[in-house]
Image (cartoon, rainbow, N blue to C red):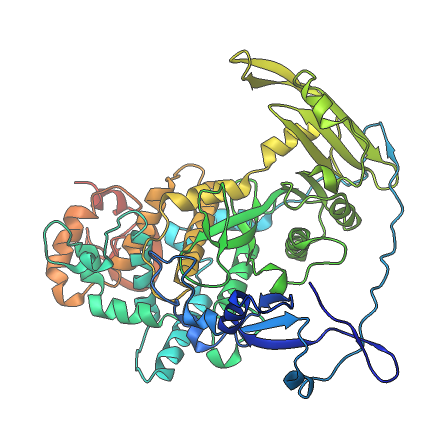
Length: 591
């Protein structure tokens, strides 16, 4: 950058001149060969990132080329350093140049060739909340509504009605209708059409009577177009996800409230697929989902999402002192975990987050951590050179321990050379493991240090969650930029509910597809059109009553007639929405 330093009348050094222009002007100026002055330019974000215009995408997702910039970007404000026009001199006041502060050098770590001697307490915590959920014997709908509970549903209803009223539309959305909309979104994960309106078509090849009987097409489209999750008059302009921030807070609270209390957790990155023009979209090469929102996720080792936060980059998120943005997100996840008590949790993450400094901070907070690490983040740990390591046989390893803080760095030769760092697990016991050899095309036994083995066993909770979501993820999306993010939250809530189902229902477990189908059917059938009750009842008897899938007996406050013996009962089948005694339950569902 060719910025010109200037002095005032007293001889004090002044900072470079800064002025704003339009991107279109700058591009035209750069193409003008007569301009000799060099400048450094960057596009500033919009002054108000939370205005009404952010509800909609900037255009069609398909076929957009990077070279054709939209008008909103061409007319965006651009800041350039180094210009010195007389016109701007009158408008801007020169500020004294800031002196760079010298960074205080930290003392170099002393590395020793020995095993780690951790001083953490052993894990002995129990989980009374899971025992309580087991005693409740909740159905799939009951488990899902632990997260989309009555408070969350009413909040979405109120904000949606408020937004519609601001647009001069009397929507009159109810909680029952919202659940019906959720049921259609869930159903689209395993039954999808090229166009969502095909659910209501009368053609025999596409008509879906469960959806058509539950809600009219135009009513669904109207509700879906006005779905809203925040008050536009109270948005935080510094938050690029202000439109969905209240929902993120509510879901994080519910996820943490019902999370299984475990020792081992995984932290990593998840991707929410999105191809629009929103500024928070990122490109990740080598990922199953390349375009979309990056989401920081903390999960259990089985894939239950405990805490999440959409990434906004360093422009909107300030990292913690002395660590990068990824390490700061790990600290925030630890804060969420320790709200349930300062227990010796053990967190696993990959080299995107790991550093010796982060291990030191977590050790001070009583949290164990293990992760792969880049060589340049090991603070000059003197291990054998990776080039020499590749010439050694598989299973070879080298390690060093920081004397002052008991942090170990281990270099292990597998199919490639990897570095693993930990503040809680050491080398011993070293065990043999089977690894594939590309040279001999066979599997051979090699030595594996303890921290590498534990990392392979417990790391991967985020990947398991992503795998579950990708199988039957919500396919319906709208024009609003956050519609795909809402689908992601629904998928995550269903994944968490299914994880609790696997823990609480050890004898009568169902797979993820059957679990989602049950929730969708209950929400849609409970909102079916009452004007065609006779036709609907005959359909339920032939299709739902005898399918032997997901029928649960639940308590009801109002006594009704039993569908089999016709006497009074205070229990009913949640799926069939019919009163039935416990003694009649099995006979009623068998042909």
